[in-house]
Amino acid sequence: MKLLRAADHRRMPWKNGGGETLEVAVFPPDAGIAGFDWRVSMAVVAEDGRFSAFPGIDRTLVLLDGGGMTLDIAGRGPVLLTPDSAPCVFPGDVGTTATLTGGPIADLNVMTARGRYAHSVERFFDIRDVSVGARETVLLLGTGMIVTTTAGDSILGPRDLALLEGGEAARVRPSTGVLMTIRPIG
Image 1 (cartoon, one colour):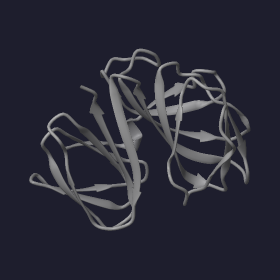
Image 2: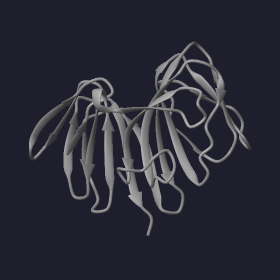
Image 3: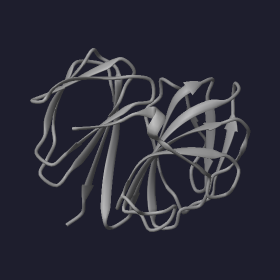
Image 4: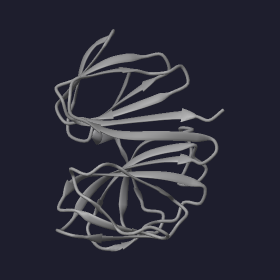
């Protein structure tokens, strides 16, 4: 297991220049804002605006903190995200605009290259045993979460993540977090 500490997340401008993101993990490791197979990032959104376009990318957004945000995704009705709502899945290459409903928010963004990688994102609210498939990567986000592996216990602080790769297993407690699974297609 690799711990991805918040203090080490890479700060970089949004693709559209409208803000700043914290890149948590990217594959391949030297990929930039384009050319990645998968990417996990976090951002604070402080004003309404248009999302960056990512052609050929599938996205999932999870609201971590704040009053809420409504996404207007081309071809769909508006989607209200709150810290309690389910993750929102949408294509990165369709026009998407965000409207804040109660001040700034913090979000978690998972992106995979369509046709090469796929991902799933879920919130969990219980002690969880996690087994990682041979070709999968799993990331866990939770504050105060204890992740137990054969190497021992690790504690995740605010915005820290744990990255587990093919064949690893872990027990996660106490009870609240986000589980992201990324796997190659084919």
